[in-house]
Length: 107
Image (cartoon, one colour):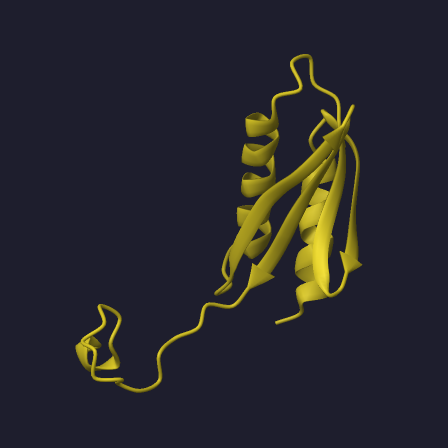
């Protein structure tokens, strides 16, 4: 699975929205941040978060990936989010604590 291709699809999906003028990814200390120039009549952060979630789900379709998006800051029409795609970790052994995702409960 190539994460660069997924990131490329994700950014293209964001740019397909007419309210987003520019979107880019920058990494600082290995953590990816997305910078989005978002122009909307009401500058609704929750609507932008929904657009990001929808674009991420479109680019993750058919793959075992999850994403996490956290709002960082806003300056006029520039929004910054910490966003990452990650592969879910599955338990490979039983620790004896009877966890709900225990390997013993798999069929």
